[in-house]
Structure formats: C-alpha cells, structure tokens
Length: 238
Image (cartoon, rainbow, N blue to C red; front, side):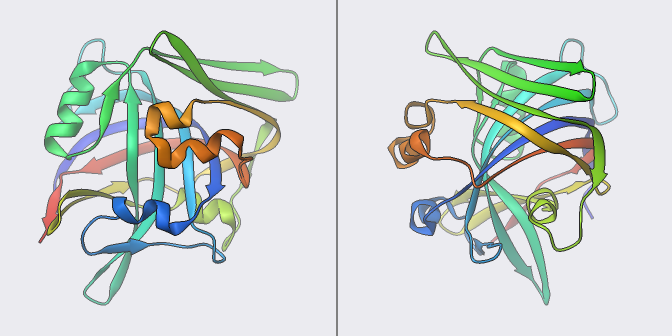
C-alpha cells in the first residue's frame, strides 16, 4: 500500500450528474479500465467543493490549505486480480493556485488548470445555499444548490452511493499506461435538494463533445457534506 501523500477535508460537495452517451467518453477511458454504469446509465458529474486544512506529507503549505475545486468527472472500474476497484476519471479540474496545478499534474498526471475561483455557503433558517464559481476568459461560470440544512444517511444501493463511493482515481498516461491512486474517506451524508442553478459554458471549457450539456438538465443533483480524506501515492498500471 502506498504511503499517504495528501490529507484534507472535502466539504460541501455539490454534484450535478448527467446521463451521457458512453461513446463520448470512450476516448477518455484509461488503459485497463472500463466505464462503470448505474442502472444502465453512464454518468458524468460536474462537482464543486472546498478543500479545507490541506496538508502535503503532513505539512501545511502557507496560502494553499483552503481552496475551491471544480471538476468534471466520470466513473470507471478496474479489475485487480479478482477484485473490482471503482474509481473516477477527470476531464478537467479547476483550482485557484498554480502550485496546486503543478503538483497534481506532475505527480498524478491529472488535468488541472488554474482559474480564479470563489464560493458561498449561506444558512437561512432550515435551508442552506452552496455555490461555486470560476472565472474563464473574463467571465464567471457557476453552479449552486439550495438544500435542507439537515443531513441524511446515504442508502445502500442508491444513486447517491454510486456517485459518492468511488475510492480510486485513474488517469490515462498513454495507450499502455494508467496512473492509479487511492482515496480514503468514511461514508458521507447528504442533504435533500430543493433547487439548483447551472451557468456553465461546457463547450468552451471542456471541448465540443461536452457542449450538449449546455442545454441538458442533470439527471440528479446532490449535496454531500464530505469528510476528512486521505490520498495515497500514485502507482502505474502497465
């Protein structure tokens, strides 16, 4: 087992889940992995959340402990011996600090980019509003959810369980190599969604293949509280 590289808390994860044609994702599926389906649906998720109390190898890096991340991801699985490992693949990950982008892209071969970001967490009586924004080419894109402020358990076998419980990250290095790393966290709780907003230029940011999302309604929207997490060092599948 690889040693722990990063620890943090992931908090207030807003997840917008779209059912998508698997053929759109096929060029992005890393070597030795395959798409993971839920009830015959191939999901792509736009996710916004906050990193809190981030540490690299146990060290807190000044001005890099608390920040937003917004990512577009889909779901895969990898058969390691007789065991299926369920994981995620990122199309792109947005963070506000160039040093974060450098470390993630260098060590984990990820697809981070650096944009200005912002967030808002508001409590209003029994409701909570969570929003995330990022500035791309002089304009701000954003996602937001309004939810009940009371958290609930995730049910076994539910869509929420499928979306939130993928504990591996996979990144395509080339046609015959994949980077693999493990993410550890306890089971999360979620909040009941009351409303949402999506103002995102998908085609401009993620490529023409994803422009169809600009006129699509998400199949589901979730808000997870999150938890402390640990990310272990990367290994190669060859």
